[in-house]
Image (cartoon, rainbow, N blue to C red; front, side):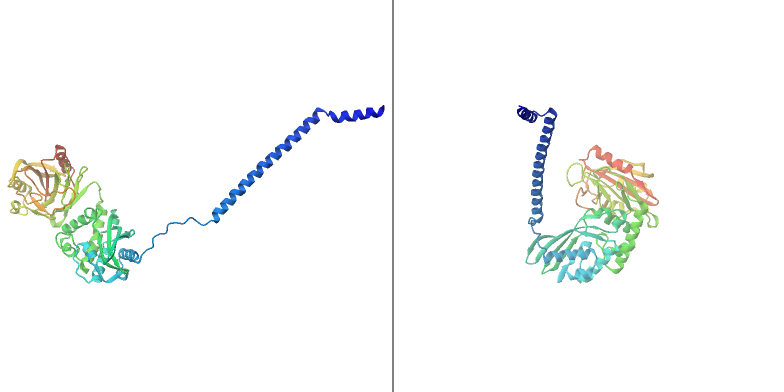
Length: 443
């Protein structure tokens, strides 16, 4: 039965393949399955990317979200902004384009302490020439509407500025300046400006006025309206003098430098009109009051408990001697002055006159207590133009302690007066002595 045997061999050969063949078959199946799975994952990822890309495309193609519209710039705001820009450029013809025919700009000229007399454009040209002469520079912010009425729309335009060539000596820009404008029918009908802000008075205006008054008294009469040195005389001659002396003042500051922690005095006038310069270093809390004194408030607000005042004899910058000093000769010695001070009516002598040293110079020192307020305040021994605001010293009172130092500096009798109230503690009295001890005179 050879046929049956052949059939058996064929069947058994297909039913039982060898082990290696099985393993090879399993490997091929696993590879095929894995490849199918990866392909499915790849397809899914591609679909996700396609959807994301379509989403981004839709976003890019979509219109932007609506923004809140900016409020329209009105003709009044444009006129206000253009006017103050023209003022900063000192361009009077350009300013005139934005001014009504009947505009009142007296508030601009009066900002310099000058009484406005008109005509409008003529005064503006003089003011612009003056500002150019003293190195005025201006940076204006946005004008802000402050309200409307039948007279027009009011705007406030803040700005920073340099004045009296402050940029050349490291001062400024001064903050807080502002224009106050009223605009009607696209034209400025009223304008004023505030310049004396941001420390400008104490940092440069008053020191410059003091220097002019002591070193160039003849020019001072041309430059200022009166002897308070607070108003500018707007004339052609005055403007030329302001330009010349403002340059000279910059040269002086550059030569001697500025110590920010030291206060400098130039009120003492020596032989041939030479100014006697000195500095001192006050502790924290002392405030300069104009150009003749410093004060400190240590107990309550406003009214100072201590002050230091300096001047010359017979009279210094904005300071006049009281009646009981006026009878002395102009060349009275420190000893003569100290004797007169020690005998002042209304004061009780505590000590002195005694010999001490101030800034390397021999001085006479007198200490007194006020028993009757008969001094010509403020100052008791001198009267000067008081400066209000901050910690001010309005006058002497019963119980106050007064210390006076009198010395001769190159022919000028320098008088330094320190006074404190009964509320002042021992620490404040020590600060007064510390300030006097720190005085240094310059060549």
